[in-house]
Image (cartoon, rainbow, N blue to C red; front, side):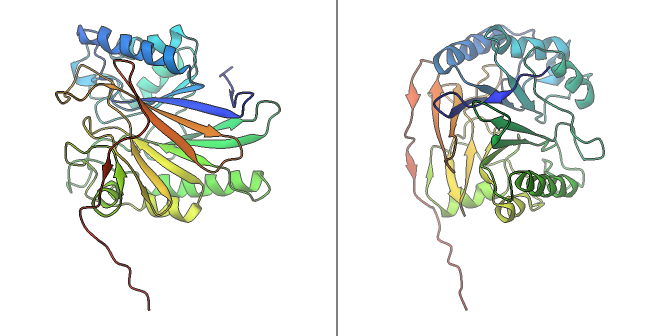
Length: 316
């Protein structure tokens, strides 16, 4: 049986987000990444570990399944529940997403699910966080496949597709109905940032850094609009861009980057690897978040980035 997710007796629930670990099971830096993950997990003792894509570097893996098992070994060693979404590099080797999902589900503590078979992508599912006692849900965690590369030739990267958006909206309605019509706080996890990450950085106060261009899809499929309309998701969490880690509020939804974790890929001198930590509290429609870095440093207040432009809304 998969492990249940429950708030602690103090009503808190803590998630460690690892992103872009890029395991290969052949590089010495894999051991460095695993050691970092272990230190972060020992320090934070989370209730859930979430991996937001590019868990492995599939194209450089002789054995992608072995790389996935190595990537989760620090989590398994501490007997923690975990879930993952796919990035654009995971399935570039000899195993496709469906095969990699089967590998995941054979690793202890896995909560990842393939999701409805008729939907685009693999790994569209929602996790329930329960109260400390009983079967009452107190929060929801949406996981979506943001795909890999553009299927239309427009831009480089893929996007969350319309059938996935319809699934999210229907799921959000059903979850609210199951709670007597009340929306529970929710978070969303996927790999590739939404186009709105450009907007929040350019026009709104953000906290953190942007050292590379935001590699969002050129096509805006409308997922952010769906989140805004449904009104349950408090924040989105992505990876993909290894040297961006900012957080910014856009119309009531906080758009967040993780902190790149893996040493087996590009980074930036002076920018330590690490993880983002997220904490929910039962009954509170908000979350707190901080960074835990390789030297044990905790960054609870990231530097302010003032908006680069201004946007005015006309009211008639």
